Structure formats: C-alpha cells, structure tokens
Image 1 (tube, helix red, strand yellow):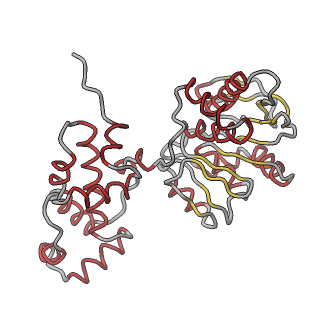
Image 2 (tube, helix red, strand yellow):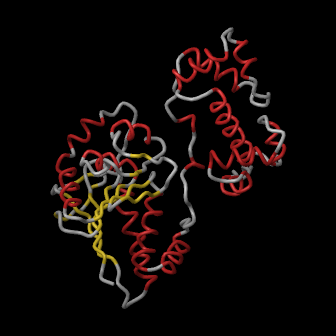
Image 3 (cartoon, helix red, strand yellow):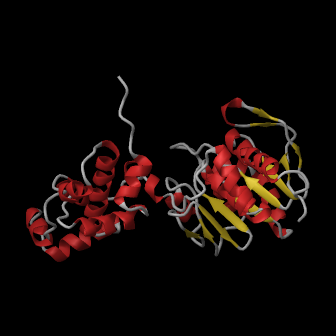
Length: 325
C-alpha cells in the first residue's frame, strides 16, 4: 500500500488544535505500524502565504498541492457571527475545496468546517454531520443535505463530515483502520488514550444550549410539564389546565415547537435522568420513578432511544467524580 497524502487546509481563524490533531495521531500510527509499512505524508496547506489560526497562533503553511485527503478544520462559530461574511472572506479556501473534490479526491471536514464544504456545494444530496450544537443551522443553510446530528463521523461518496473537536480523532482512527489496519488503529488509540468505540454524539447533547423553540403558549405548557416530571402524562388534564381542547393544545404546541407535548416531556425526563445518573448514586429504578416511570425497563428503553446508551452504560461513561475536599 502506498503512502497516503493528507493535506490540512489552514485558513484565518481556524482552530489550531484541529490543524494539528489529525497529523499527530497519524504520526503515532506510523510509529506503531513500524518500519517498512506505508505511512502518511501530512502537510499543512493554504492558498495564502500567511495564516493566523485561533488564539493568534501563526501557522507555517505550504502552497496548495495535490493530496489524497484534504481535511478542513472548523472555526469559532460564536453567537452573533455573520456566517455569510465569514464564508465570503474564505473564498480562496472554498475554491480550493471545490477544486480538490472535482479532481476526485476525498474531502473531510471537522466540526463546522462542514460550513465551508456546504459553501463549496459538496453537501447537496449527501448524508452529513457536524457538531450537534450547529446541526440545525447547517440544515437550514444547506436544505439539500441530510444532516445526521447523532453521528460522530459520516462518509458519503468521497465526502466525510465529523462532529465537534474530538471527533477528529474518531475520523483519524477510521482513516488509520482503513490504511494501516485494525490492529494499528487499536494500538494507536490505546497509546493516545482515545476512545475507539464511540459511535454517537447523542450522549453529549445538552438541550439547554440549543435554541429554544416556541412562543408564550408553548413555553407555559413546557413549564407545566417540566415542573411535574414524575406525574403521569394526561393530555386531557393538561388541556384543561390551559382551558383549551386537546386538539387545540396539540395544534398550537406543534405550530410553535414542531413537536408534541409528550415528546417534550420525554426529553425533559431524560435530561433530568442524565443529571441524576451523573451526580448521584441512586439506582436506575429509583431514577426511573423520579422522572415518571414505574417500569425501569420502559424507562431504560426510552433513555437509550434518546441518548444511544442504556442508563448504566451512560453512568459509567459520565459519572462525575466526587469533589475532593
């Protein structure tokens, strides 16, 4: 197998860690594979002569060249950022991405680097992902793409997109697995203390950070449900509380939020259960009761549907260590 040429596309304001994270893991994989095994030729490339990354880090870059895989890091997407203006300022990079893909070579984005791929027209008709925090915005900007916010890495006909920051390691391990073999990938992951068994970003979603849908009516309904998580769900009683029919309640709530009151309640129950699993030693059965489920099996199935993990597995992964006095 020949040496795999990997180019990291640096641009103004890109996350420096995402420029170096993939090359560092590939370097480790080369050492793990040992002499005589095909490795990786990695370069940091740019259409610009000088690039300053996030945090004011000056990057040494090479001129654009033909590579087998072009990796596009993400950037700081803060509230209030004019994304259109940001992408317009990166026209040379977008053109380079488009040209690279047109030559039939693989393109990879890390986190919101997917927005540059979208600007280059590469996401239309493809399954893609990005950070769960920005998945809705990507779907809005690129309606022709099928955004899969639950996935860590999605590859569709030569275009790979990943979730946020640390998902670059999930991608890199996948690349190592394909190019150097499963054994090399597994050993590299162990040496780097990187989890090579992750499959979903769903367990990391914090709904409190997502844009909150709804107007005053739905917010009042949500508040009523959130304050009574352990109470049985009774649509009729809920409608009576707000002096409307069940049909009107469902219609108005759906119009304002795009979901049903029960869907919201289930999400809130799971969010509360996650907190209890992370911060207490209560049994799963006790937590199930606390969030409105008499049957622990029903609760566990719902929890797994929302987070991708059974309650005990979630606790093992996310249990917060007790504070040391």
